[in-house]
Length: 363
Image (tube, rainbow, N blue to C red):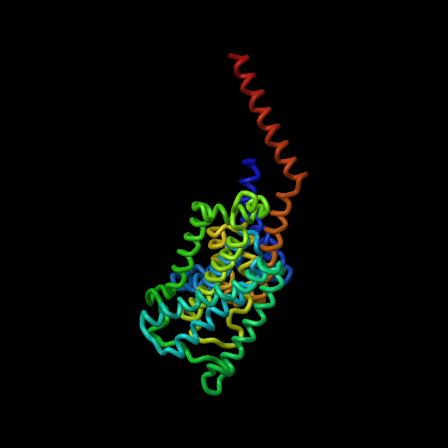
């Protein structure tokens, strides 16, 4: 059992190492130096306080969407609508800021609040359809992603279009999250994301509510027999998951992009699902993996400039991390592999006992 736990914890690290090795092989096959390429990649993302700040800002939306996916998955519901909830949170925040004209802390807090509510509402739709009609939440949540994207397009091209440019007006300077300092230009939204990760970890593993959520995820029928309100817990898992994703959209709008335009939020939802799976649905693990993905993305330009390879190499590395992590997790769950680990543990224990007996005999 201990060996299994150690391997479970080490699996993401092994997946990252294997992916970097495979990526290095690809770079070498292109006739470039992979060692110099990786050195410049990490220098471009960690070489100075400003570069570290940019890496964290890049990772921020991934933290939120991966946390959203992790929490829902722990309850046994597959929320693949993180991207739509992320987008709807940003749309609601943009509309609130533009239409109300509120500025300062009031406008900022109001924008974040409506983003949370919009994300929760958008997640409640597949949740209600699942518990009321038994519809597959994976299909409905994915369909709602497209609806959210198209609705955002309507907002920035028609309803809130800024003149002749297909984009919404920028949110007021006093509403933006700003930067911590000139030397470390990270917006406070990153701190909000880290606090969310710690809070969700505590709720999930150190509260009775979190225990009920995990129990439903492990066996919904057994939870129902033991008196747990399974449908209510599933809906709450959807609501909390959507609220976290919606908050991520608000933070990305107020802290980084400041306006809606084509491509806003694209890919964050499915990347968040992949990060959650790599982290094995642990909120703190999701935080670390998302930051690592942010480091890779922030340093991709430096990699391209240093060794003249396309930035798509970073996408290949990320995809390989996902493949190796999922494959490793599946391997650990195979009965034959479990039996092999158990037999290894048994043989080690018997060898230790034999050694102790031999020592006593010598004495």
